[in-house]
Image 1 (cartoon, rainbow, N blue to C red):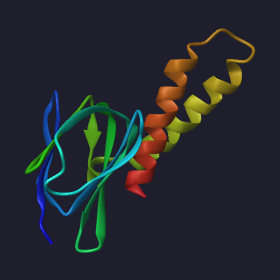
Image 2 (cartoon, one colour):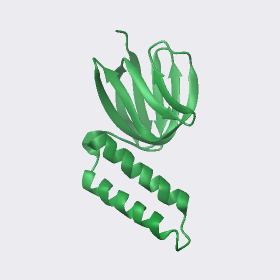
Image 3 (cartoon, one colour):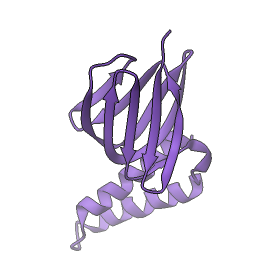
Image 4 (cartoon, helix red, strand yellow):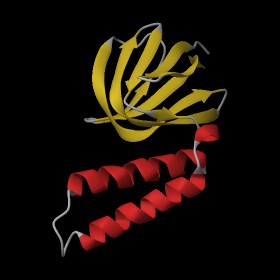
Length: 132
């Protein structure tokens, strides 16, 4: 099966570079499955893992927002932050999840920034999904 070159880049530098038979991401409009020779487009991404499929196996990368640029021979993901499973501290992500959930519970009684708390929860859940 043919493959497409895939790069995941953050402001801190490259996170992933390789090839994939298919790339699956979640954009603002929903889930996208991208194969080699796909029509070019650019779209924003949500806080969700990206899946890189090769030989029936999936590799995950935690992506925390950004954009995807698709060209027929290359896919570039420009992420605000991205993490490979091997770089994720699972215990730290669990604690972040608990803190965010507690903030959201307390927010019903106090004034909190719900968007910030929800995004913290999404990032923690994203990390846990990729790492586990």
